[in-house]
Length: 513
Picture 1: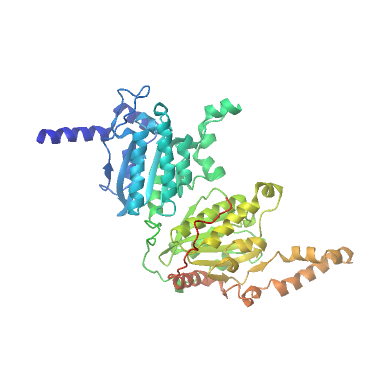
Picture 2: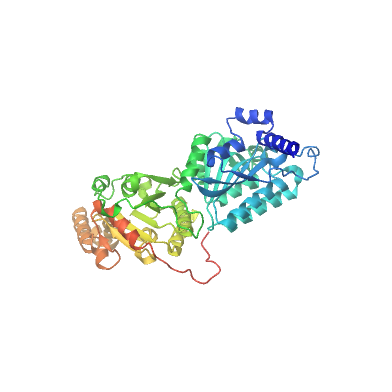
């Protein structure tokens, strides 16, 4: 027995150590090994590996005689801050992390266990793609992963971390995940690589330019978070998990109340200019609203005209959506609508209350937006809010015009509590625009058109855009002092904590994708 134990120990140590030259090559590229990454991600000593001794059984070219253990993926379960998670980390030192039948089967097993036990799934991607030698069975393996991604959607949180190449069909798993993390100068993700692009289109493009972290953070919107190195990236994955429930039947982790219901923030009135056309940073408002000024912004570099963030208010996790006047004056456009819609649906799926900060002049006009389908894409955000059954609180900070007011979680589409600052302007459009439409003929024939326009605009404002007009009609619950925003929102959320609204009996709705 002693000999058997020693033999087993030596084999396990050899598997864990990896092939020396391949490990050194990985380190020279500035990348950690799969096991080193798991050590950073998980609590010390918590990892339980499954199928360490798994080997492929394929007979394809250049595979005979090469049957390394693990088959290029380290899979199992561990804890993050004492909470159970399931993980797999592709090992680029073995077959370039390529996915074959055995490799895929290990990932399938981990995902099945995560769904069965109600624990988050974290995938660390570092793979050259499908293992060509295994042919269609490799593609079948990817299909099994995607099917499980969809089965897990809205059931357990799914986090994809791209720490190397993620090419071809492999890129669809991060796209199906709830959140995707990438690292600059290390991560690349694309369906067709630079060589194929050059062959088919004649376009010459590098790996970073085609599918680097900044491309997906700023242009495609696939990456929710981007960091400079693997250490900070995996540390932020741990922080994100602290804001998420283990599954859709549990509440997000909470802290004891911190007195938010009586906390006044007079600086809020200084941050937001009274003049409706002056910009400010909505993130500064958000920092005053949430506990300790801490929030985790999602897709910070994409669709910057809307801010989406996870934070806590009085110890409870909330999702915050806010228009950003610093970018395009805070208008809603195609990208902003998609970004906010997906975030709203994620929060609703996992029981995270929604707080919506409104300062929106409307939808972005122009042929580019109309031809691009702003009607359809804007309807995604409308659908997401209408469908949401979690507690919902709307705060109208300044202007809220036209259809954009409706879409930003107005009373008419089901918000539970609507609050407004005394600076609110809620109307079909601004006073100047309304006067130009309603009194076009009178202005054209007036001796002093500018004077008449100013007089008519003032009258329009007094009649239809004064701060209490919407409250008088029951579409706003209260007009609050800006300094009382944090306390008012905290009290509203406390009031709504027991909210239950059963979903309608149907297979699923038909969201305008």
